[in-house]
Image 1 (cartoon, rainbow, N blue to C red):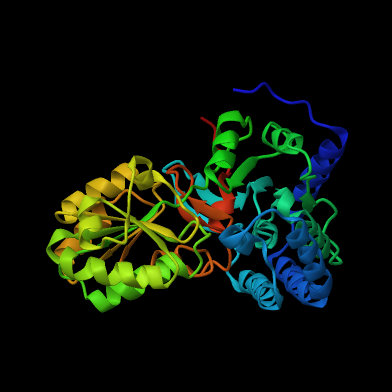
Image 2: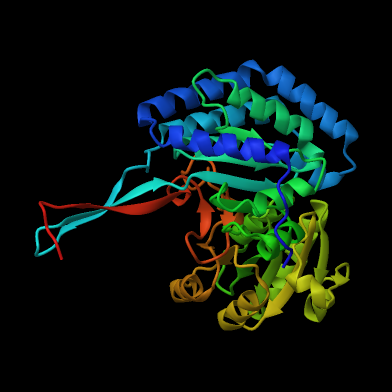
Length: 415
């Protein structure tokens, strides 16, 4: 454990502004928050040119390549989608002040449990500028101030987006703060700012998440890496299975809900593996496999031990033949990062067993892992995919950005 870092004056000033803004935001009505969110969406479109020019500067200066560069890239379509996601969040029900439970005790005390904002939410993330907007608007909708610490690769994009949102008239100063990404010190300052920051969310690769988890003094909600699996059972519709595998692996391989491992029932391996390996290779995927996979498809590269636990985040997939659903479940629970797993099968008993026993945040039957996403779940956006079990699990958005408190109403009762 690293000792608590002293907070520099620039970071402290931003955190204190955020703390003040959080107190104001907690008093905003749903109508006021929604009105400002719609203005934020409009502002993103109005300033799209500036945002794209800032992103071009990041792309030019970046040393990223391939799928990782795609995570950084903004284009007119992605900017429009970002604005639309803000509007989607504005249209969602506001969880703040929702009554979760209410009851009256025999002594006449009325006890009510209600949702309340967390306060100041910090998020440390890497090279995806859309996270800047997602985090800011979800926090704003739930009456939280947000402190953003993005990756240096997206510094110009993040600054353009954060300034665009914060400049909307009516948004309190400090509601959306962006920390300097040119130095690692700001990460340490944020995660040790107990008393100024209520919770920190790390969103990125295993190295970033591990660093935050091991060194934070502030409470952490962990988002996890995505070593996601697809199991094709013996009764699967192979055409459906092929579509799901290709989509889950190739549609956007750089994100955490892309499939990384394919498990195939031994009874259909001879028929399915040559077919799917050919389709994957045609799509540009490097395929690795166990001994049986290599025997059935000689063009496959032999997998090594660490392949089974690695999150590739690129066009690479490892294939393993299993004896059935029990071995598939055992393999997944051993090697997965508890993110998203799919079974493709026509056998309902096997599907329900898989859904019940696979220990991951999202478990699918006959669908792509790519649906583990706040927008796809109807949440508008997300802060990340939580793979831990305390406070929240899976895509977390508005409800998970709240805590609760008890309001106790009496008529003079004493104990």
